[in-house]
Image 1 (tube, helix red, strand yellow):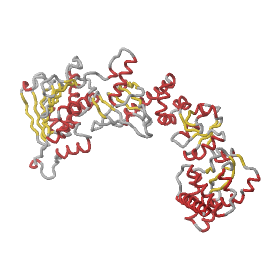
Image 2: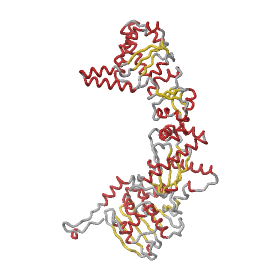
Image 3: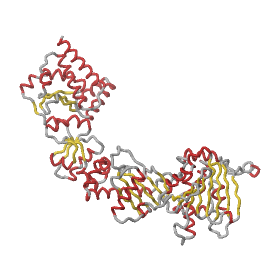
Length: 615
């Protein structure tokens, strides 16, 4: 961090990079760390790693023999540990030079699985809140080791000196910060205590906090993680885990799922959300590594379909990123994600087999998540497809109930198609499922895998029209002139017109069309307009074969019975356009500009006709 001696580096000689510490700290604050508050987490991580090394050096010592003590009184922040401590060589290796490696540093790197952070880069985060860092340490590796003092300043300068062992009677390290005035938000005693609890509530070493008022230090982590405690009964355990989930996440879980993966030392709980989650919205999960909170927004710990739970876990073998605020995507994380997904599947299976009330409440809130899973998971499909709710012509019901009523289950390809035909199909006794929602059409088509006796087919417009009753020959002939006028008026929309009888009688007309047919007609029209000439004529002929929409007028409706008797050509055209516009609006599909214009024009024309008649 000091400037190189230019006299010792003549022209052409190798030089070393100069480090602008202020620029480096600015880089850390804006691009590596999410908030200055991480300084305390980094200090606590260093202390935990030092304690881990001390236990490795003195294995007979009990886990709670050494601890961490925090102090903040508004003027200083101090973190003290009983860890392995630093020698003068360690100070030069880890504190005085950024990025330097050594044989011992390499040995430590090989043992990274035992540690959370990295001492040097973590200590730099303290410059986010202070202009000077004071470190006093004494190594436990040598009985008569002297104390070593290191003072680093924000301008990049530092001093190192050796002190008598009496300067620190016991091995360990004390880091003291003198906060800047602009960092008071993060260094007030109450805030330091809150941050310590936030980051270190699950640490395995005892951590205490002293605010300098003379009282006894408060424990930051008085109890072990709730899943590590013993309880008198399974019910008491379940209630305790649910209470912890409510404390952490702020909602009462529908249920809690214990997570235990011994291979990676992971334990924790998944809390099932009690309310529906918007499709695609993923919640972050609280991930601790060796007790230290790593992230509250770790989405990558679970697959995308598992957005119905929020997890809090503590793991031994997950690898943090450089900022220690998220998880590094590697094979271990991928294996953990798969294993946790399997735990969630097993919970769903248990609920389906032994707790139908819980399953019902779960599916009411999270059927979309389960549908997403069932598409790709045959076991969940077989287990839960009959229980999943769908929108049908019989209302919202399960496929199991719907298939008992309808031997053939028809499914639409879009929501708008279902809305077009639902009332008429229901009156005709057809069983139709709305397949326009995500996953629904694909899942309905897989119903025969669960119920071999069930038949599933896509709804074809011809299927619906075949169930509408034709009118008698005399009525058809009497309406022929009107139908011809109507077909001519609606030809611009590639729409045919027919007269039928169907229920409910209150529906004057039904517009039978599909999104695919509309797209095909639009594509053909654009191609014909762009090509012109011979190719335009050929494409125009092909266009005649494109599927057409069909406006089916209901002879049972009084308005239609009156309309088909109109003998005035202009009024007949206007009434047909109005019936088309009304049917298009009832289909709830987006209207094309020409259709919106037609609806406005036909309304005004009918109004003008009525006014002329009354005058």
